[in-house]
Length: 277
Image (cartoon, rainbow, N blue to C red; front, top):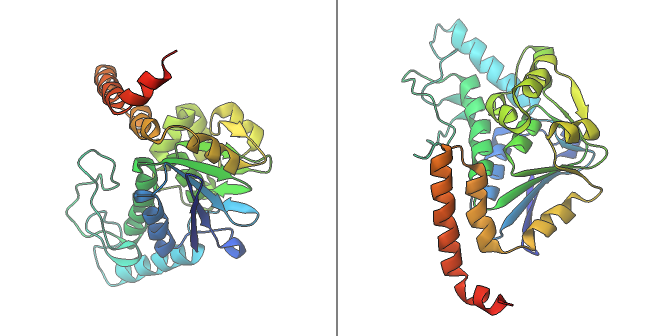
């Protein structure tokens, strides 16, 4: 389901399940996380095969989670609603790192429900995208819905074709996006627009997404944007990404900026001297 091709400084990651609008199973979430965690290129471009970017969670997987939950409740288990240790469809828990880039922010000691484990899996994939050493570009062509929108929000850049659309439809059928969208969308488009999208379930076209800042460009060729970024200095990109992502207090950010700038100048000293004049 996840296809990878490396070349020209870009790892091209394709969610290849067009018959299901590229909906993601738990295994595909793991494969997507692995594809971005330590790429050999300075840029990763994520796209969907066929007429959709990604429809979010695979509905068969969601149904399996619901069945596990019902069975647990009927058996009198306390696994129905817990958010603690991993079980079920979303198992194989991986703790977040000490910098807060991981997805395991809760501290509950109780057993984790199948639904919470599935949400954790999506959160872990979004966190892997966000913390990847590469610049990750989402090239959205067609529908980005639910978890597809949430994973796009975790990317460093989002570019759209004229046919792209974006939405968080969970509330229209009794759910909501739980792959980190409740906090990432607020950071990307602001609290008001994020609340509007999440609470109304409305869909944005490419022009509306550009106006809100959800995407930075509308283009017929999202891969061209990835190649443009990859044409820049790889060391500078690697130093710059975490600075752009930082949510530390302003003083700490400026200190980190100075430190990274000085380290980069030291690394690039010879080439910078050669460029003089």
